[in-house]
Length: 354
Image (cartoon, rainbow, N blue to C red; front, side):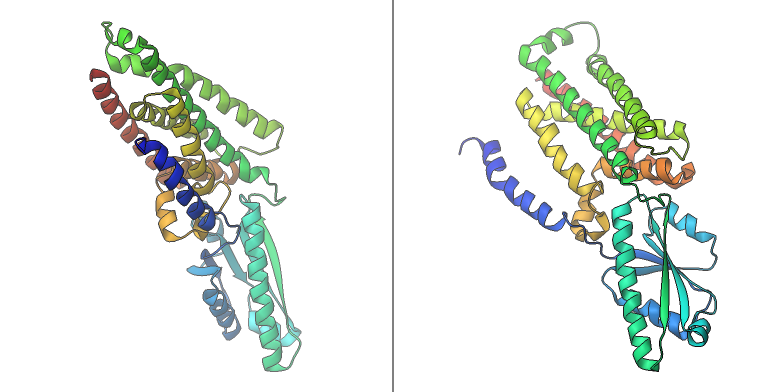
C-alpha cells in the first residue's frame, strides 16, 4: 500500500484498459463524413440522401457542385465516402428500370473502405425495395464501387504508415529515456555535469546516436515498403523525410521527458514501452477508425503524436498530395516537439540540480 505506483498499475490500469478496449477496439464505422455529388436533384435522389442522413453510419457533410472536387475532399482527410448520382437519375429509373450510383472511398484504409461500401450498398438495397413496393414496378439501383489511391485494396497501404509511426516513436522514446536514466543510476551523469560543458549539450549529445539510428530505421522501412511490399511513395519524398525527422525529434523529446519523471531503467522501459504502446495502437487510427470512437476518446487521441504523423504519411506517401494538405499535421507535430523539448529540458535541469 505504501507503493503508490504499484497500486496505480494494479487498480487503475485494468480500468483504463477495459474502457479503451471496450470503446476503441471496433471495426464498426460510425458517423462517417459523407459528400454527395448530385447533378439530378430530383425526388428519388433526395429520398436516398435522407436515408443516408438517417443512418448512424453516415453524416452528410458536404454537397459537391463539381465532379473535380472529389479528389480534393479526400486529400484533406475529412471525407470518408463520396456518393455520385448519375445524371437524370429518376428519369432513367422510371424509363429503363435502372439507375447507377458511384460509391467512392479512400483506399488508403482498405478495410474501412470495404466496410463503408457494404453499409452504403445495404442502404441502397433498402431504398430499391421501398421504391419497388411504392410504384409496383421493378427498379434496380446499380452501385459502382471505386477505391481511390488503392484500387487493389492492398493492406500494406494501411499498415506501413502505422508501423512507421509506432516503430519510430517507441524506439526513440524508449532508448533515449533508458540511456539517460542509466547515467543517473550509475552516477556518471553527475560526473558529466561537473565538466565545463553545459548540461543542455550533454543531454542533446545523448540523443544524437538515437537520432542517427532512427534515420537508418526510417530509410530501412521506406526501402522495404517500396521494394518489398510495393507501397509507392506517391508524394514528395523530401517532405516525407522532413516530416519524419520532425517526428523523430518529437519522440526523442518524449523520451527525454520520461527520463525526468522516473529514476530507474525498469520504470523508464515500462513508461516508454507499455504506457505508449496502448495509446499508439488504439488511439492513433493505426488499426481502429478514430471517427467511430466516443467523442471523449477522439479528443484524447488528439494528444497522441502518432495520430498526426500517420495521417500525414498516408497523405504524402499513398495519396500523393501537395504539401498544403499536410500543413495542419506538420504544424501540430512541430508544436508538440517544441513543447516537449522545452518542458523536458526544464524538468531535467531542475532534477539534476537537486
